[in-house]
Length: 241
Image (cartoon, rainbow, N blue to C red; front, top):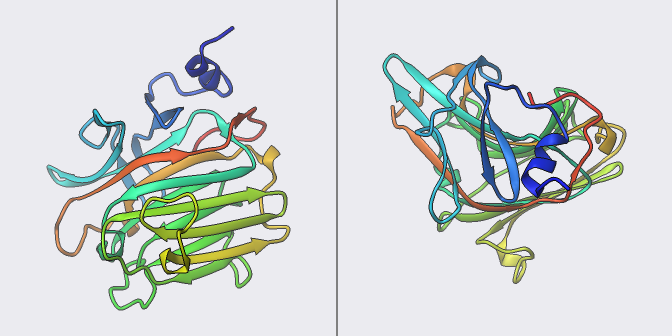
């Protein structure tokens, strides 16, 4: 029998040149090269993506030479129905208007479930976060405001047949101690919700809107202390984007 790490990697092909890390009980491929979204230049350097001695995942948006370097990881194995919960340590409410942070599930642009923290280049936007089942529309997009007292937040995507339930909490909790811990939540249902057989992978990225540098010129780092994910499933759809 294959060890757990090897079995998970074997569920789908990973490009031979891709750097792979192990975090939150999964193998993750680190994106590199020039590509969307953005477009951005994605760095697989250990200065851009790393796991520290405490087991926390770090994504860094860095300036190197004449260009900015974005960061993204994606599970090498596909994910299935269930709760995908991300424990974040970052000031997501103060991200520059050109910076986007997102934990999401993805097969292709028409089979995608996102939590995105962004102002989409508009510093005056009243909203700085959104839940969306792609492609976006009036029934599949919920924008909201995130205002934080600290840097610990928990964000979940509960994916089931025909329904996605989103929730964001202050602090690191599986369930909120009371309603005051709830930042936002939404339920999106219908034909737009991907099926488990569509081959979605878990992704986490930190990037620039249109490749435009932060207006303040500052590098950005987002830390995820952990993630709780449902069991990996066989991939029937496309590999990680």
